[in-house]
Image (cartoon, rainbow, N blue to C red):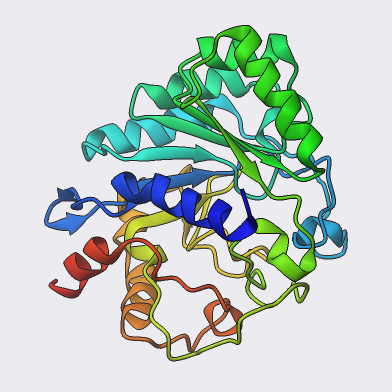
Length: 286
């Protein structure tokens, strides 16, 4: 599979989740996808990731605790959230030793998938994830085709359904954007063939998704690696209050109208319109 096909397959896979009709609470569209960073660390330093520069994204190894996850689930049950969770964020989720308890708790609300570099996975651990309440595991393969063979053999030997594990080929070089939808991570990465920043381009991210960091802080999306704008903390306010709050609505409205006029958005070159059209339409009608 070439790099372009890898990207297109990943986009296609998410369409039923991210491009569905939005759910509402008090006439406010709810997110369909909540990304959660359960640890502030990664064991890798990929050149296309801010973790490659410890001055920007040092490994602190701060971890999400269960009290935070329980608070999130309580908040979401109140508003009858029916979306999905993704364990990824700003770190490698498998480094959080409490990950299986986190998955169990989140599953009480909705499906949970995880994006990992696969470095901590062996047959025993992969089987444990399959037997847990995780709905899907996405493994980014950064080193080469030998990883693809390794994990395919592991999956076959364990008898794990192929649709449970997504093997994402990302070992391509800079000339092929590493097999990713490459972005500048809101102005801090410049490797690969980066698209130009278009400050007049719409963005749907805050219409259908948000990022919850390890400590409960909520950000617009995963591109704000410098954590410049905190919209609230779920240990201090309810999730819905933050999601529908005036500050997030201000950013959301500007981005829907093609105004990337405030940081971090003014430094960001992400497309922002790949998913979430139906959610953006619902917000525009308010």
